[in-house]
Length: 431
Ligand SMILES: *Cc1c(COP(=O)(O)O)cnc(C)c1O
Image (cartoon, rainbow, N blue to C red; front, side):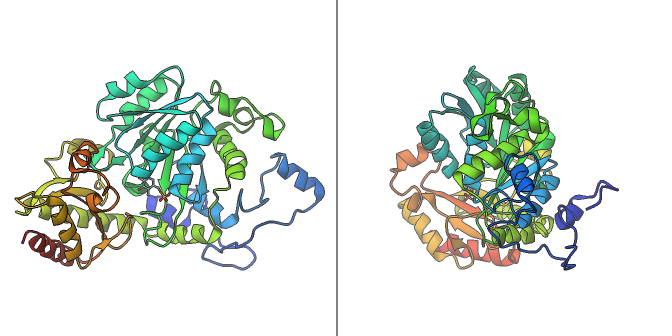
């Protein structure tokens, strides 16, 4: 893509990072399904391995199809570069492994995806990294948890199950005042609804498995960096790296220092790389991202409004509704709409509400019962009878996922059909 003009979001979705293949003329991005690349000469090979020249070595480190996905994501997030990974979990892990050392600490929002909570709480502990979880809506909580050992702040643009919207600019200002990078998981928003780097975040991670791919067909993740964070006094990126002849990543690569270390040290050594075929499928997803997100958001608002009025529904946590406590933050950070994933509560009534939740799920026709979000199809899960079934009702309340809570990921179907399906299941479950 030429740099003659600052192209719009949709143009970047379709063109960024790719020019038609010079040899074959292929208009679509080719799938380079190869493990390795022939070196021009032994000298060139030596240069590549010493990182004195950038080029393809081995698909665990880089791949031309994946490079298009990475450049496109960097363009869409207004970042300086990107690194694709095997999954969203791998994107987070690669980021943290690159930044942190044993003894470091992280301050994280407590409104997190369940898998992220487990990774931060348990796996990071094994690496001697302590994560302090804070209620994210009050900036004082973040501030109070920062210590001289804090090396990163971590949050999500749209947090579940409360549908909370993070005040990114506030948290970014705090991070900057302590010279700590702010990492934002923006999976629920996608770069079309929110670009955290524009609000002062330093690193964005995504589970590309969700809205970026958009079709529920591929697991993948991506890290995008702003390239502006000053790592001069940040040991893991500034200090000599023993496994690269004491190369100093920040001094050598400047704005690309963090990403170069993430790629050539962390990804090389953990092996959590994406397959070229999945990169290709994620590129297909990106090409229609804005169109799908507009429809996801439109359907989600219609569903949330419908549920809010329904006699069998106790509450709806969607920041797109005017009476949500997060409505003003949503207007600022996700003005096109706060995504399509949200929770609502079944009215408790006299019977067992957990059984009612089960009956509701069983009675749905179109919503698929599964543990995913961001598919083109509508999805539903009842945590009390699935992911959290071992917890008592009291424990569920404490975890913020009461037995009446249902989570939806609203898809792209005809809206009347989705409302018909929900209404029908709500009637059935109230019998
Ligand atoms: C799904 C998800 C992840 C994990 O991504 P995977 O691709 O499943 O590894 C992380 N964060 C959020 C917000 C998610 O929805």
